[in-house]
Amino acid sequence: MYRLYEYPLSGNCHKLRLPLTQLGHPFESVRIDILNGENHSAEFLRINLVGNVPVLEIGDGNWLPESNAGLWYLGEGGIDLSPYPAIRSWLIRVGQQPRYVPMEALDPG
Ligand SMILES: N[C@@H](CCC(=O)N[C@@H](CS)C(=O)NCC(=O)O)C(=O)O
Image (tube, rainbow, N blue to C red; front, side):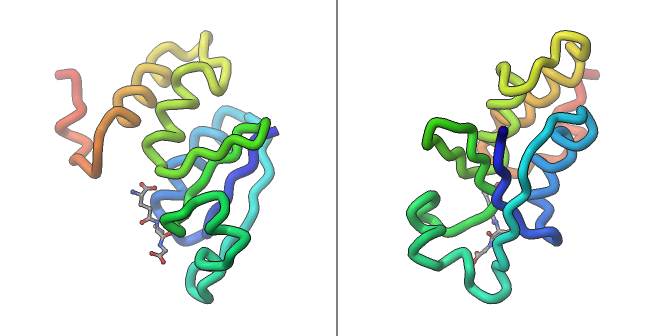
């Protein structure tokens, strides 16, 4: 089962929580209290040297920091999206963006 290291008020964390919950994919949420510095604990820095949330743990000791990397991973097969091709291509498209871009810029027209 995936594990999402997240903070509830973080928009970057919401980007991953949203598809996981909406598509009903089971995952364990691990709350990292960034307001109290829990993201800078030695334990958390072991899974993300940068000390940011979200981090998606995908099993076998592999962790994906960066919200867009997580979206890209989900779109590329991390969740079975065969019934939802539009969601799949949207996740991949958003995940390929190097940083924030306005939604309109991703509109295929
Ligand atoms: N580019 C990163 C940004 C992640 C990020 O800025 N996370 C914030 C919460 S939204 C964080 O962990 N801040 C804690 C800190 O900077 O100490 C992503 O998209 O995942």
